[in-house]
Image (cartoon, rainbow, N blue to C red; front, side, top):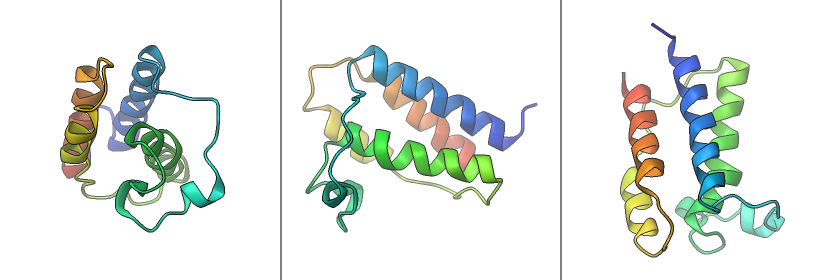
Length: 107
């Protein structure tokens, strides 16, 4: 069985691929102000998919690459479900991957 770090890295790669496939990945980096919001999920400055791309995925990748302790959970699935209700993009697989990542972190 893969270790937890490899499993998280695999899910993050799949998450990026799925976001790209559904046009939820951008080449334009948000402003510094947008990235440093104090609100949960940067709700006042970013769309949820931008938060995933520029905050969540890079932070988890960094933790994996440095071998630091992984969080025991992230609890982002409810926010993802709410946020994706507002989009016309196909997000079922993205939600499944976020659930999978959460399950890995909780084990």
